[in-house]
Length: 479
Ligand code: C2O
Ligand code: CU
Ligand code: CU
Image (spheres, rainbow, N blue to C red):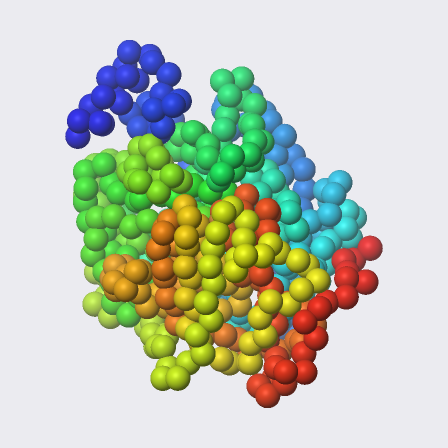
């Protein structure tokens, strides 16, 4: 309360808040939250859902009247939301209309490595990449963003990202897109008073901006019209961690983590998400009230400062929503199976996993298809996180302690605080390809770009020993 009082006073006195860290108390919430368009696929006679996505340059006014150059997918900043169902056959056409090569990675999707959109699937300027796969994973919220080797920070920061929502039968949760089921893409920026967006990615963590945009909207408000609203929150920032609280400390129900539903809703008043993570919450509103969603400052270097993120304004009359179900149709929890192989990874400095930086030609790990393993991630320095492509995992423990209840659902990205060891029960996929790797990496994009990333292949069980540990780079990319 004391700190908040100080900040409000500082804002009132017109003092610059930069340096204190945070924007709390200085926002006016004057801009209606933009809801990304829901992209309708073209469905052919074969039943395949076809989505056209174009990476393109444009201009965006984060500050009214001050357009700045940005990138987007089918627009000038961010991209449309894709809704797909389990069992769908999807075909993407990704057009690169930028003047440089990029990729589009489907973060959180379970798919063959050649469709993954990582650094081995570069799309040259003017080229089209056409990945296709069958959606076969539970209800959840995933996303897409570029993954070019050493350039992911810049490409994501400029605006290339969007949400993918997977459906699989009724959940009992609000699901009317943009009405009571709201995408919330959190990103921070460094925006000068003339509207210029800085692209400084130096320092230990790279970009830690002082301005927040939600779905590309600066200083946003959201009007809600029902008593319960589901927020699908994606941390699409380069480095910033958000400790999500409401200004009035109200409790909310956490219903899903990155990879799908929790078995039952968890009531809490604070959750944290680091870059790449998703969390879904259901919040209750009274008619006519308003409340601010904030990020409370923490002690992890990437969460300094109190930030007001979004003001939510409830209409004077609200439609009444169904109660949040006591139990959710979640996938079975991922258990650490007896005798599971344990792989250990040490994160050090800003760029190393097990003492090595990323090498595009080196396979670091060979995994048998369908494996259940325990990955032990030891972070000997400052804040990092770890994202593994193509998997679902459950956090077993954090320095030997059970994770908070709200973090016990399926995930693909986990915060690893400084000087901490996190153990994961990991479920690997079954699409085999001995020559095309998936990635695992820190999702603080500066670290990923500097080389805090490794590569693994998934191979038929029993063939691990005969797999080549080097990749030929000849013929990479689509030219
Ligand atoms: Cu969200 Cu390998 O990335
Ligand atoms: Cu990913
Ligand atoms: Cu890191």
